[in-house]
Image 1 (tube, helix red, strand yellow):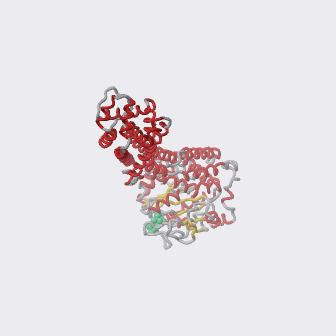
Image 2 (cartoon, rainbow, N blue to C red):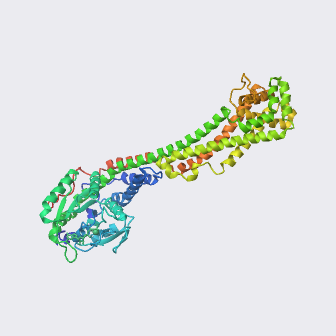
Image 3 (cartoon, rainbow, N blue to C red):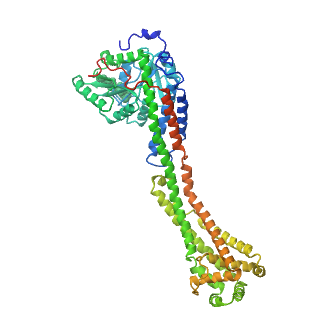
Length: 612
Ligand SMILES: Nc1nc2c(ncn2[C@@H]2O[C@H](COP(=O)(O)OP(=O)(O)OP(=O)(O)O)[C@@H](O)[C@H]2O)c(=O)[nH]1
Ligand SMILES: [Mg+2]
């Protein structure tokens, strides 16, 4: 086997690491890349802090992107930056059965990775390196999430390490699971491994080279400047020229024309499952030259690393957009809830203004309370006489007072239950129509809280008590209250409540007796008789504000059942900005570091019989 040259030439040579280290002539000053690890660590933290809890179309892709970026930072970017001189990692990727494992085995002249007829064969990655490089890969800086093993494993969370003296130092092969696997774990792992590659060796076959998935990956490799070499495997000799030409065209069309292409003819594997030397020789020789050329190897590492770093910015930008969308969606959902409950408050306010509460039971009880017909007939009487009559009407008649009070209470409670039910329904449908909202809903949110009736009753009773307090406080210095004592306070309070139920206009000119409006006049007249014009206005408006405040608080609690859900899900508003800032820092540090030299292909051409 002459593929890798004489191992003796490597035997005494210092590790590649030393030759491609920061001392090497073409490297930027040692401190040039200094800001990068810090910037990357900052970016990693910003990505780690980003949450995409709301069910939006962008959320799942964002979660995947965030996980992929975090993996790539940990698996590759941070360890690679810390050790620019570490061995070059060639990740061998491609469709299942393309012959990846067979190829790796053949290149290192040993059965390091099981090849087989069962698809997919390789489920956990196998890394082959020269014994001199084993320590670096074993220590687990690179791909730290994979547990190192020395035995073959079926588990995708492991990385089997194998040394092969036939493989020169400075270069390692990683045999990956298939990239378009039917096995999810394989596919995900293959993607993760490709993101940790200094060089992708794409293996495809005469039968599979036009498949979509590999081309998607190749395009993304191209987009971020990853070094790529292609192997077209198992090509029937008679069709070699035609297929190679077609693949070359496809590569050129994807702007990948510079990727070295090796065409390997279909052949028989030997008893060990290895390909004959003559088939692998051109590829082996190409890798041998790369292994021997520290400068080129370093350039490849830098190009891929710089490309991966440059690709961070747009990817993180998309992530930031998704984070902003999350915030905007929580705002939108909150607004739907607020609008529904604002509507409820408006209905209450309207109900208090338009006199619709002064109907039925309340009206009947009020009329009964003030003595119905007789009371209205006496409206023209002088204030003093009216006052006397009111006092007489209310004194010693506790039952109608209690009934009126109950009627007011149940009228208000009915109103509150109605508006709370309507608001819950509106908020519920508002969320249901939004993908993120629908995911946050629970069936009980379609209705007011179970204890709403109880709370509404308590609210009204508290308000009624508050009104009496108000009457007592406002009327405290008046002889009337002093003279007529507790019962008059009660009666006045009820009249104030009725006044709250009426329109704001105080002294209507025409007196429509025994109608709702007439009743209003009666309530106001009674109050005026007792307190005088301004005092009435003050009392009624204070009681009204108090009622609306209490109702507002109740409805806020109702709305909070929804809002608590968005509050829990809500990502920090500054997530997007923090991501953009962190990516900007990386970009600045990347420019300062000047990792990649002149743009353009850095890989040697496949000039040893590779391209057709
Ligand atoms: N005749 C012939 N058989 C080959 C060749 N290359 C690979 N094979 C056989 O094809 C089968 C699949 O090869 P593998 O090397 O396991 O393929 P793989 O790409 O690693 O497949 P996964 O691990 O499933 O992704 C094995 O039985 C190999 O022996 C070849 O060039 N000629
Ligand atoms: Mg395999």
